[in-house]
Image (cartoon, rainbow, N blue to C red; front, top):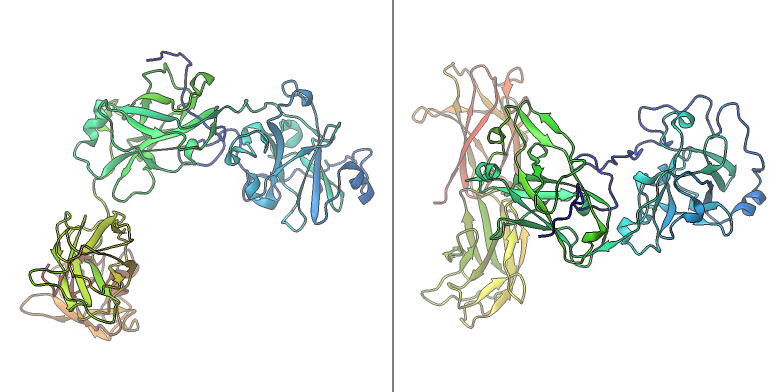
Length: 613
């Protein structure tokens, strides 16, 4: 193993600037988004400044407001406004030494402070044999008072990927806080209708404190890490949890770390395929999320890094921040890269990821997310529909079957709705929202005809979500069942089914108090507080009212409350309406509610189905 003491090392994209995990703000400067004048939120324009010229000071000598003067400074472009500045040398950045891969870029309130050319940031061009840099912005944009920012950035000839070209908030103009009173931009002065000059206080020149490092391209690199014994213990039995990673190297997109290899390492691409990145610094977080629900990592479950392998230390690792009492979060891990590690295919060893110390000093007390995943409160129905004019015939001893992750890839017989034309399968039990389901159809087994999403085969895929409980696969199934191992191509879509039953509300009183009168009032009956009374079923002990099926379909959402016959007293959920998604085949819904004092919330118990499940 290489034992390079580069100190504080680890990946990094030159796009930097993300100070909080999942955040999109520069650690050096925040983008003044939302400021129509370019003035940061909460800060006022300095007194006496209206056009960008400081109070009590005149226009810079030699700057004319005539259009002819504008043409003399930079070329005019029809329909554009020209913006220019004089590049002044600082102690650290000098024009004569400016690297060829760097150019000034300008952005502002006219483009929402975009950071690249695609969004409207403008690469400024040097006027030959002068210290003038200029560019053009649309004349019909929202210019306001021309709030703006100029930074150095990788230019279009640098060779870096286009997403790494443009504004870099870490390399902005080097103005004095005394001159600018805390503003995030220097002044700008109108020279002519189509020309503005960017100025530093009383002079039309700007300088810079730092210049970007030489862009060294890296490809197909990865990083790897192990997890500590305490983290392994915390994750034991938590099958619904997964380790995830995000950072400046991938635009803060949360990606799964996958499975550990035989040596216990999780490996995640830093740069995938033929993509490029620039050596510099990278910020990242390693954390945990609910694997079934998917989405982003839980901020309060970010994990700490205990450096090992090739590294002695990690710099800029942030602090431990208290969240929700005794639960702690680790801020971004900031890693520095070295030219020694530019080899294509290099894998960076981050060392061991562990649980941060808890308030009582032990990792074991650290809380991890619940193993519970959100579930559908209804069943899920899948219909296979033959679009051919003629029905197909299934041979004796065979049946239309469905197989997939929904049933362990075991062929189950589907319900025959219309012979040779329509077949149905009802999935009940634990159906997790956000967890992908895969399946296909056949005429009984794997060696005969099948219905798949393409001529090449594959599986139909759907991701359950609230309010979508019925799906149809439509296909021309002429000759389906002939037994020649043919493949039929089908199209999957969400297609709800008309209810075939009225649905009873069966409401049990959740208290021992007397129920004088209780009614259901909802969007399905015009929100009449007294129209639909709940009548007690003496034998069962609950109160009953009927929702007529009418034109309702599966997946329909109904909203209602339980009232005392007036709107003086009512109960829903959290003071709002109670909502239900109607499932396939339901004949009743069981609920609990306080129908004595009409306080608290309605509680869902279960659906009652006509179909055996």
